[in-house]
Amino acid sequence: MKRRTFCAASAAALATAAFPLRLRAAAASDVAAVALDGRQLTLKSTDIDDLRATVRGELITAGEGGYDAARRLWNPAFDRHPALIVRCLGAADVRRAVSFSASHGLLTAVHAGGHSFAGHSGCDGGLVIDVSPMRAVEIDPLKREARVEAGALLGHLDREAQAFALATTAGVAADTGVAGLTLGGGLGRLGRRFGLACDNLLAAELITADGRWLPVSATDNPELLWGLRGGGGNFGVVTAFTFQLHEVGPQVYGGTVTYSFKDARRLLRSFADFLARAPDELYVDVDLDVDEHGEKVVELDVCYSGPLKDAERVTAPLRRLGKPQQEQLAMQPYVKIQGSAQTPGTAEEGIYLKGGFIDGLTPTFIDTLVGVAESMPSDSFEIGFQQAGGAIARVAPTGSAYWNRSASHDMHVLASWKVPGDGAERNRDWVRRAWAQLAPLTRGYYVNISSAEQHAETVHGAYGDNYPRLVALKKRYDPTNLFRLNANINPAA
Ligand SMILES: Cc1cc2nc3c(=O)[nH]c(=O)nc-3n(C[C@H](O)[C@H](O)[C@H](O)COP(=O)(O)OP(=O)(O)OC[C@H]3O[C@@H](n4cnc5c(N)ncnc54)[C@H](O)[C@@H]3O)c2cc1C
Image 1 (cartoon, rainbow, N blue to C red):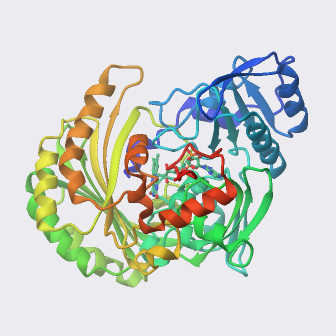
Image 2: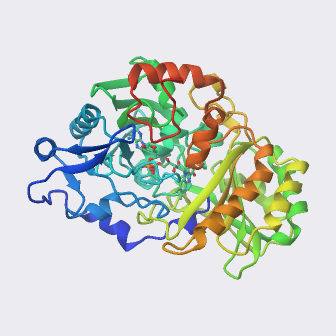
Image 3: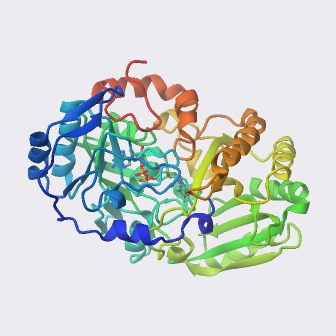
């Protein structure tokens, strides 16, 4: 996932982070809302007042101060208007919000970093449980563990942990939420060394659909730990995560190498040969997209986190795949390469994507890919690959809810367009046509980098043979499917 496309800080995002939590509106009146089954219902003002009086954070309804900032999602393709937003300050607020939702049978969304490509952290007419104000990160350097509240962003975790030269696998954009990323899996620059973010999840604190607070770890409710490692937000609202940390940096070696797309076929074949022998300390994202001059390029985003004395030797072949247009590999702080100093942002444009796992950059795959990329319009499109393998593949597919362990890469085909604007349908249409050619070469898909219709049509492809076990867990902890805005595990299946 290319960082420069998405991390533009916006005034809107800053406003979201800064609006005062204690702003209260006048007494609420009755509010029209939407039930879990889509029915219209009315929430009585007295019930809303009762909830407002019990939460420590803020309850916001349409028209109240802060509503527009609080309902905004990272992806402006989704313009959701919830009936209620509870900006939670702690587990008690989450519990109250969950109980309110469950007792009224309300459509319910959970919002942490707000980066869901499918717009799943917002909803129309329902209740949003917004954990984004809960952002504490505590590092225990002796145990090498981090306790992270559910609203923290990756940049918060990276910065705190790197103060002790520690880190765990996190995604490549600092403003992504720890919660959604971890619950869906969590691919990132350290994944081939230390596994997915969810593989490093030691414990969690969970509020279930019936309002219970549960500790989750290898000894407390271990089946839930298995489910939270890749099963998404299906089993409740996590209020805090505990991660295993590892010694990393603080200096690593990396940056970008950019080649012209003209020689893409040959270049990608050489690249695939190189990757087959690359060590786990090396992670390389590949993006086929269009540069600022409108030219198609192949861009490699490189991070080598092994011994620095080996860095230039290990990465040298990446500079020799052809004649680079640009090469910006250098020793730099891990937090810099992770973009951790960036201000939380929202995407400037609406985004639509499709994604799936592949089993290697084989010659057949490269031929199809380059053919599709040749037809890619010369603006606002991208075909990208996040590298997996290494430690990720050393965990058995049944070892956690995250099933697709043997994939070499997660691929996405993405389009963006100005909002408001008329590019949405044209650009979505290109993604669908490109995907029709590429999908037959994929096996399963990643719940975190996919569209809502992929979840609806092919959810088994994400969970594989783990699906029946996940359904059993869902039946036990969320039999009414209160938490359904995700890659949904249907308790009635
Ligand atoms: C710019 C960008 C870069 C990305 N890069 C990567 C990457 O490098 N690696 C990678 O693996 N993924 C990446 N992703 C995908 C990312 O992992 C998902 O979008 C993820 O869902 C974001 O988590 P969030 O907390 O920000 O999202 P949200 O939109 O807040 O939540 C996403 C989902 O998780 C659920 N959820 C959120 N918080 C909780 C909670 N506390 N308890 C239970 N359920 C919860 C929500 O209900 C929703 O279904 C990227 C996404 C973007 C937009």
